[in-house]
Length: 176
Image 1 (cartoon, rainbow, N blue to C red):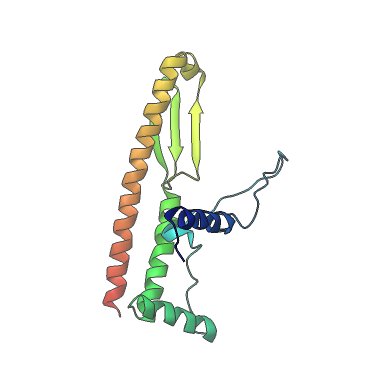
Image 2 (spheres, rainbow, N blue to C red):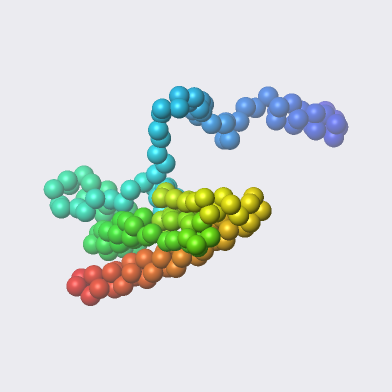
């Protein structure tokens, strides 16, 4: 039986067209709510959005301890090191959320306050009558400058929080 290239290409195309793929198909349809009284919060977490850090293990839940031990072993760590890492992560997340970085010039009527998260969870933009009197172009320029200043200050705060986390880990490791 002689098979031509056209037959092979045609059959391959048919096979590809009839095969259904669901790799990029969402499993749940998103339907936005239109109720203006509905408030939603978005939780942003480090390490791929895995959620809040693990609670400190008090040894009471044997199943959880076994699961944490497996995770720690998979990462090449002891259970204590893994728990220390999770504690340090939770502490750093809180430190970053507690940052209040400011930018702008109150004399020009434009100030920005934000936390250390990126994008920020806490963001307050204040434009006074003095700022409004600047005009559209000057106000836009001052807003951009204020946002940039607050963003730079929050970056510095995040860096300090990361250094603090590393110091915390180093201090805790001395006791292990």
